[in-house]
Amino acid sequence: MSHVSEQPVERVTIPILQRWKEEGRRLVVSTAYDAVAARIADPVVDIILVGDSVGNVCLGFENTLPVSVAMMNHHLEAVARTKPRALLVADMPFLSFHLSVEETIRNAGGFLQRGAAAVKLEGGDKRIEMVRALVDCEIPVMGHLGLTPQSINVMGGFKVQGRKADAALRLLDDAHRLQEAGCFALVLEGIPAELAARATSSLTIPTIGIGAGPDCSGQVLVFHDVLGLTEGHRPKFVRAYVEGFQLLHDALSRWATDVRSGAFPGHQESYRLPEGLGEAIANWAPSNLT
Ligand code: KIV
Image (cartoon, rainbow, N blue to C red; front, side):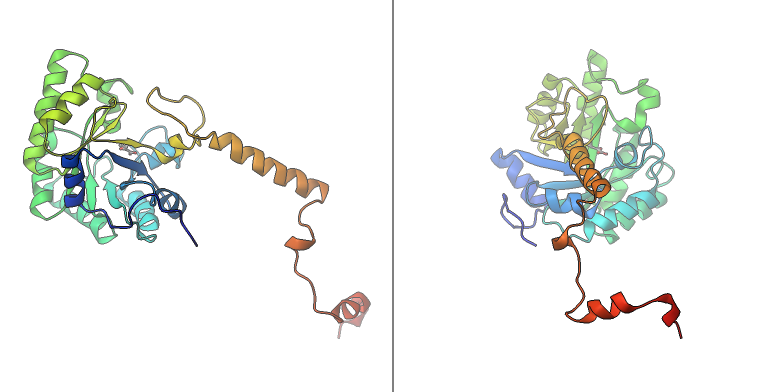
């Protein structure tokens, strides 16, 4: 199988990401939940995130809250089998890093044992103890602040965060606390562009924005959103580069039409008997049964 490589083949590591931040090179991050998506994304992106968004994007849940460690392990293993050169980050799902330090380390360590190079977890101040414990165990952590989907019940829905002074200042404090606790990067989701820009300019670690304006160190989007594979409401921050859903639907419809009309399969999609065997088959009758 051949890939068109748009990036150097060098395996992306955390020190390389840090160097790119210092050089002002923007980071490109995409989700992938299976081997097909990983193979498409890997030549293009710097980080592959096995996000808990798999819950609403692929598994039919309304949000990410029902996603379990077992589900994440299943999807992470599929992506890890492709041995991506991009840094592979696994998302810690709801309740996998809240109950105890021991359970948090076991869940995150399990992700590393399955091929992830780092984990991502949502939250600021309240999660610092867990971030420190993971970093102490040599488990690299990516933070995630702003519109954190695991907090929808507290936020009252998917609402832009940090629009009031106290919330904006709290986010900046949290960003610095996460950096001090050892996070190697920080996702900023659903916040005003000016706030993301201030966080980015004041932190030494890279920020990765989604709905956080153009001044982050990099950008992340859900693979299915970039390819127009998700149906229904498209958030303001999404840009689809192809209408994949419609494109794939049309292709599948043409195949279905060909099956119904008998135009598929044709001669070239069929196997043939060797010369001479056709006659024996034609002469066979049920009465020949011995
Ligand atoms: O789960 C996910 O896909 C994410 C990204 C959108 C940042 O957390």
